[in-house]
Length: 337
Image 1 (spheres, rainbow, N blue to C red):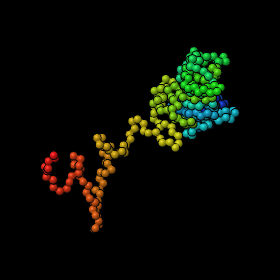
Image 2: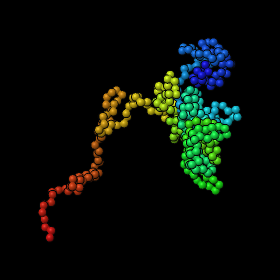
Image 3: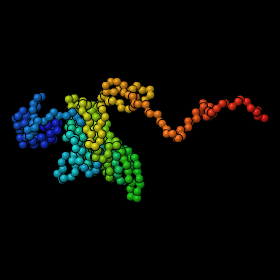
């Protein structure tokens, strides 16, 4: 029951259990006292008297998390959270993994808890890529030792690929840019591993998560992943009945133009026909008329008495010169000496 209500977006699993304990959830008119109830097709489930609609297909969003937001729905300390700062109109979402409050970059959001868990678990082997700015001194040889794994304060981290991209020497150390690629994604893994090498990370950006990249997404912006991409990239992690069918428009933030027609949709071509191309069609099926077709001929310009008419421009001959008026000059003439 808790899983079903959470999947339908009513609340989180823990909150659903609290709703059931408070007697606010009913199945076919009977108040529930335990979440261990199986719901059959055709059953009517209500929360506070309102019918819970069928769960949406799996949806996925790319979000550029800025620094200063906690990846959580609620924070006892009152710190700002990611979900408090999401744009209006989004469904209830959960994060795929986390980014700590001082990290930024790509954060995937979904309405499917099963999909989130599948992408988070190390057994799936989803690759995460980060760009870290650190202070200290190191070289590529030291970074290459991370490929064999490392244990920090009793926690073992698996193979990590780290590449030294840039180093700027200073009086007391170097400012470094390092690209880090890993598959586990344990709590603060990049920071702790680089600190074990004597580096202090002062900026951390997640560039990609699996096949999804941060790209040009601005800080705080959200973009929904299309259903075709979800089916192609994530079908093995989603229950067949939860796969999107592509029969609804993608979410767009207010103030931005809506997405164009889906593949297969009919769109009228409103551009004038060009030479060598068949004419466009009107909604009634006939050929689209050009702007000049059917328009009245322009009226002949008249001049008032006493006005000088404009002179005709000379006609350019094929040889490149202008044709002379009057008879042609006789051929021949005095021979040159």
